[in-house]
Amino acid sequence: MYAITIPVPGGPEALVWDEVPDPVPGEGEVLVEVVASGVNRADLLQRQGFYDPPPGASPYPGLEVSGRIGALGPGVSGWAVGDEVCALLAGGGYAEKVCVPVGQLLPVPDGLDIVSAAALPEVTATVWSNVFMIAHLNAGETFLVHGGGSGIGTMAVQLAKAVGARVAVTAGGTDKLERCRELGADILIDYREQDFVEELHKVTGGVGADVILDIIGAKYLARNIEALAVNGRLAVIGLQGGRKGELDLGKLLAKRAAVTATSLRGRPLAEKAAIVAAVREHVWPLIAGGRVRAVVDRTLPMRDAATAHRVVEDSAHVGKVLLTTG
Image (cartoon, rainbow, N blue to C red; front, side, top):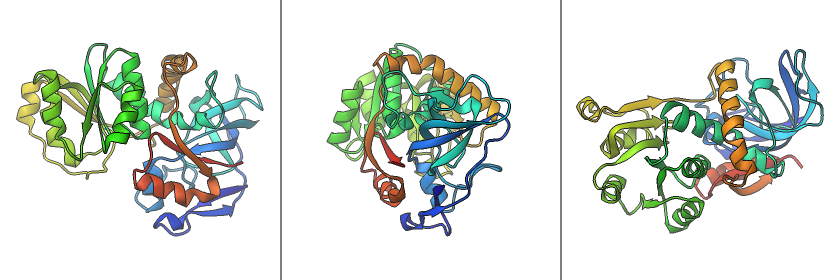
């Protein structure tokens, strides 16, 4: 088969479409013949040499795919060759074939095409696990998501609205903010022109956000605490603004607030399987019912992964950028 390899870490040109050995499914795995793969910022970090795959994972980038089952490994039941699926991966998605633990497999949602399904596994698993399983966002609460135009952001807006929360977003520029509004965002903050703490306090009467989903990290840490409501929950899932910040524990104590930080890729298989099962139970019906949709900015041939990485690096997209094998 062919896959995107990284012979030497570096810029987008480091991605090489090359012939590699076919994977063979092991115990509890299925082989997926890939139709499309989602591009995530973690892939950019791996390409640069900053985010190695977990032990035992494929060396190729790609954390989510859609496709058709080509073979079943030993001990797999409940699935059949030819089933249309999408899957959460620890790596290997930028390829024509990939092996997937069966617990990380999802059917393509009813009413959705197989290519667009590649936009779902990583964002749904990330948002559902952090915003709902950990931060417990409830109806009537105020939710702030940074990077509202990203793949994570566009999914977070929709899921928060689906459970009855009031949604605030930060994004750069009126075009991205308008797209967020179309998805259901109530409070639009242009981080290039406005201070999100001030704007959030204005519209909430000084109360702040009950839950914040943050992809920035250190740069926003202190301001996120300022923006939190009493009993607020800050979920940090990215480090685009650095990894070391100063935390005022006095403010955290006064607000009886909580800060959590998680990543998805390196979690044990059992934890990933539990998250995927929760996504199938809670999110898949919303997609099938048309209340939540996959937001795809563009699709590109997988061999042109370098162009896709440039698009994501430049934040020149809304929703997900997908790579297709066809």
